[in-house]
Image (cartoon, rainbow, N blue to C red; front, side, top):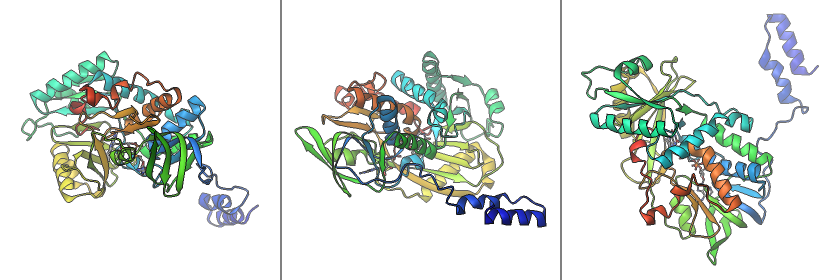
Length: 432
Ligand SMILES: Cc1cc2nc3c(=O)[nH]c(=O)nc-3n(C[C@H](O)[C@H](O)[C@H](O)COP(=O)(O)OP(=O)(O)OC[C@H]3O[C@@H](n4cnc5c(N)ncnc54)[C@H](O)[C@@H]3O)c2cc1C
């Protein structure tokens, strides 16, 4: 019997209580139970990899996992300038949904929501998926019309979406202020039963752990500072730890897409804006569905820990900065109090921001770039967390086979030259 177990037994005898934490100390002090590094021991960088993934967020990790697991491509390095999942993956509000407006968008996000459904099993890692549904509110006749439009498109494409009247909303969300005398009275809403949330960090951790188990190397604190282009191809990637050659490279660097693409001489039609969110202290469970109001620019959900997560639209000016502002805190607070006045008593715990890369049509840019062996996973704006699994799957398929999967064909960079934009602006505002 080890010393901590003996001590625990002794205290148990004296005080008559089982001291679990003390009994557990044996795992900490005995070298018979060594800690398991989740992502394998950090290795030295090799001079060449078949595939280099720039960016160790959820997307980068997912691409690596699908490359290794589905296509047997394992000579892969993920290069992350900070730490795994420390970018927008760690900053988002975890909304997962597929009730978009365009056929291309709905089909794409529906597949992602389906993949999320089995992700914990697939990765053997609990991503804490909670199917809570999402309610989008309409405060005007015009909003009612556009939500009806979305409901029609969604139903046609097998996504669960339906219009709710005031009575149904009252029953679904009893705490919502439904007075007809309100500044912005609620006329109806779009109910999306497939809406869910997941633990954002766990998605990145699960994919990265799975990828590393397959032989992928994760290199944190490794920043890409340049891309060497020779004869229209990426010959090597320059990092703060030296230059590495590669067969192909893919960028998955939400928030700095244009900066990294520029290193390969590629201009992206992207403007980057801070997006903020904030969270209250935990309270007892009061709100199950996610509720969003594009009209007053706010959305809210209560986590299983009890915190109310509150977000809205992007900052009004383009900026590379992740500071949070008093103006945004005030405007989010004013908006949410219109809908849930009881939150006037709630205390804010923290506020944060990420940088979001906004495309003109609020859809991503995915696919091969004008540089022959360089792939883009870019333009994820305020909507990319929910796309993590499908993005990993389709980008891996593209890299492995050289063929663009039909699901992501509409999101190629060339659409901006062909004027074939996939306009999701109407389904993105303040719903994420
Ligand atoms: C406040 C907020 C709320 C959001 N809410 C939602 C939501 O509810 N639902 C939703 O679907 N989306 C939401 N989003 C958007 C979502 O967070 C992103 O689209 C998504 O996380 C993108 O994933 P990623 O893996 O591509 O990016 P990231 O997690 O940002 O990963 C990119 C990584 O690249 C690294 N990197 C950058 N440059 C370099 C370099 N030169 N060399 C090496 N590494 C580099 C970064 O350090 C980073 O870790 C929100 C975003 C914010 C900011």
